[in-house]
Amino acid sequence: MPLLALATLEPWLATIFWSSLTIAFYLLAKQLYSRWPRWWLMPLALTPALLIVVVLVVHANYGDYLHGAGWLLTVLGPVTVAFAVPIYEQRALIKRDWAVLAIGMVAGTLTAVGTSWLLATLLGLNGTLRLSLLPRSISTPFAMLVSQDIGGVPNLTAVFVVMTGVFGAVLGDLLLSWLPIRSSLARGALFAIGAHGAGTARANQIGPEEGSIAGLLMVLVGLLNVLVATLISLLLH
Image (cartoon, rainbow, N blue to C red; front, side, top):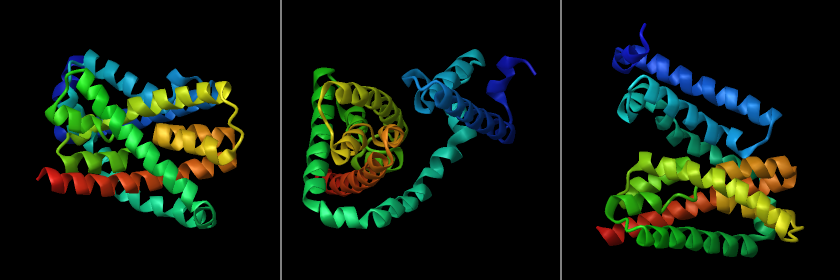
């Protein structure tokens, strides 16, 4: 089959092709990153890059890809239920350090939303694009829900989330090399609040305690943002 014909596949063939390609690229990127931990080999960075190349080669577009692999985005909704697990596992930590965690969550959320709004203002962005940018600093399942609630475009928000995660994880490593951060709580919080899922994966590489804290805070910050987004949507409407 000619490559250019891939853009006009039957729906069921498109689903098999784009879904299989996405999963295969992700598994490949995961293997490469485990062997050579470089930021450009992170699955969140390499997988979209490879998919973009394929889309350009076969003269497809985002709509073609979404029709074929959109179910992968759909399953992100039920995945949010699993986020209750780290909250339960770290209930002792929440009880012990709830005040510090609350301050960090609020500060991180305000910083993320504030810098997103400032960046959009500086770049002259407004309307739907600005609203799509606001939830960029939380994990994808939460971010897409927040984006939908406040009037953004969930799929566009997912792109901003990936970019934030990749660059946030890289910047987190630089900050750890520059700043004398010795507390596992502080290190885990730095990656979770600044780089959500990608940061949590990096925190797990640093240490099990940092990874646990990052996983917990990633979920709590996501829940906080969903609550804030609900309030914002009520005010906007």
